[in-house]
Length: 141
Image (cartoon, rainbow, N blue to C red; front, side):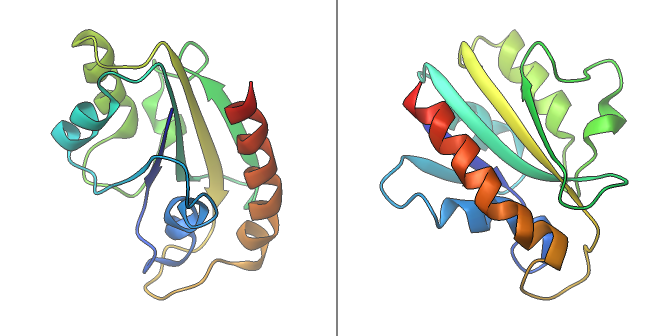
């Protein structure tokens, strides 16, 4: 099992993924810098992966949990993050190349503040404990 975080901890709410990795020091984890090939190489060979990313949305702090089959792939703008490459397109590439783990989850946290600076907005910070609990439950399954 690998825990993957997208995001930049120096862009406020975009740092929710890296911040979550800090809560799992003994888990195999990867802070994805955004280039597709690095993600594909880290996913390869794993049976399970959980990815966390901040997304644009109307309700800051709202947490979405999607299996690979549930991710809105035909509307990738529904999973809009602030990274160089689109997350959904990179995951489609992982699937096509046989590198997407059979048990894949994407946790998407709606964010409101992508400005430069450290620290999460109050709504995303408040969601962090629930996000951690839900991911720990998924890891234990």
